[in-house]
Length: 329
Ligand code: TYM
Image 1 (cartoon, rainbow, N blue to C red):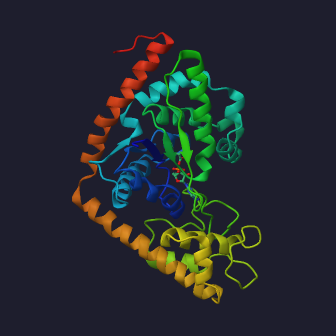
Image 2: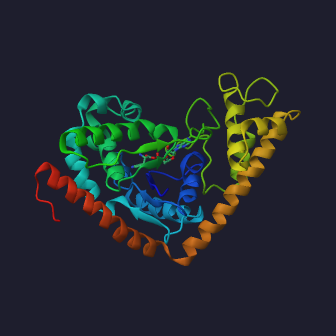
Image 3: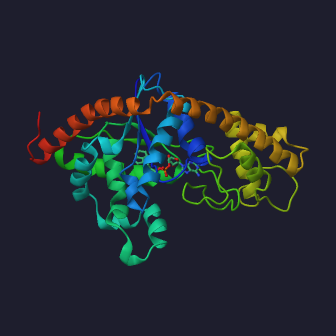
């Protein structure tokens, strides 16, 4: 059965391996049999200070990586959030249905705001999940493939949609987050108790890193005192993370990966992980370079904005009518 699938990435930094394993590599799997919307959450990138040129370049890079990962603009709608004003409109309306209490409980908000001076926490950072809910609800998305750290935001979106529907009737489709069993939380190589993240360059593998640098990062990844290559998240977080990366990129189970490395030392195991990571990222980089050279990016973005706006505007119109504002249709 055809589903409506939607997901996005925030262009706040360079894409890292966690983004690829937890989200990006899954997107194109849906495009043959579903209606797929994949976008760049560029308005969300403004929630923390960012250099305009960096934001612009990150945005182009992510579009290029979307295509390099096999997303086809003729099958999926690929677009920029800021080019579809309906996101901001629905975000404003939905903000009235979100409560301060539930917003204050969002883990990402707590994490990000704890690093800031209380007086300089932007409102956008606080209301971030409301805009994210608008992103999802505008396209009537049923399936939202994300990494583990976004689950709470998709659940808030469900709550907002149910709350709104309860009051105004059947306006929104209720989305479901889809999170892979393995690989939904890739950890930092330098501190495997922390998530790999675009904004924490230490211990991260970036999709644009030089392959020699990637190899070096993996060979110097933090492991533990033991010698067995075994999955044990509690006692062997570093080895478990590397096993997760290996099994995801090889498309095998963790158990199968463990069997491959039964008699391996850590050094040889790391070499095998580095080989598969470099092979995967090397191929992606080749395609990424071809795409940038082809000059197709602007065309993809323009096509996506038209396609996305059509559906998003219909939803906003439906919502406006429901609440008593003048809809356009
Ligand atoms: P963002 O840009 O932080 O991350 C993009 C996607 O990558 C996943 N991810 C990871 N997966 C596994 N291991 C990791 N270490 C890792 N780090 C990141 C994220 O879970 C995400 O799926 N709020 C979103 C962007 C967004 C969005 C949306 C997503 C805005 N509106 C609507 C889905 C639907 C974000 O900041 O993702």
